[in-house]
Length: 267
Image (cartoon, rainbow, N blue to C red; front, top):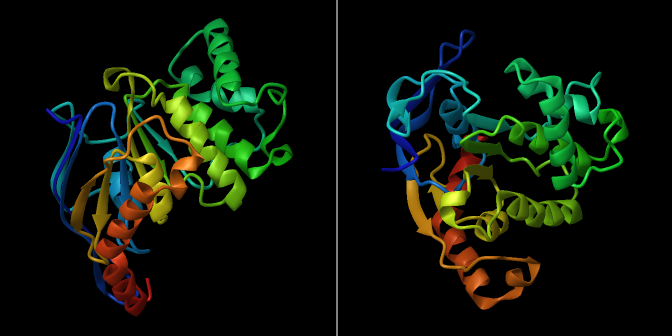
């Protein structure tokens, strides 16, 4: 049985001003398995982030259902950790306090929270910045703090919405490698969490993923399911190899026409 099953999801948005109805998602179906790194890639406006929020229980749907371990998702839960591209770190809390926020709400003791946050600070490479506030951190450091905060709840599924979109290109490359290490790509599949990742970058999708769901322009549908043949573990040297470039070319061929179509829609 798939860890997450998405069946016939439809989502419409209604404009109160123009009375226009926009069909964002049209019958989305997909399955993602335990321990996989799955990615949604497609043109702007195709509904990738909307679909991720529906999986998180943060967005309503007009039709269909999403199952986690066979149980329908009907609202937010700590079992599904959501990481946004804008970090969403309360600016009045330090790195350590941000990481401990979820466990505190769940009633975890102060001692356990402290041990957990110290461990995660080490894991994401923020040792020495425990007492810094978000405004004192670089973009990459903020995103690592946000990732640690998401991991602190020990979710069964990580939902990552373009988490590296707001950092510079060099930092983005480094964070891709760091994410794979934190995820535990060298561990057996049964020891890893399911990750569902949203990106516009084909390069990023190929480098990170086991499976890529290529989406159409609005209304979003699944156009192609690409099972990535590249072996793990991976590092940046992979990006100059022929198998990597072939995979990129294949995915670009899947969505090029969709990107052009999205441009005519004005995103």
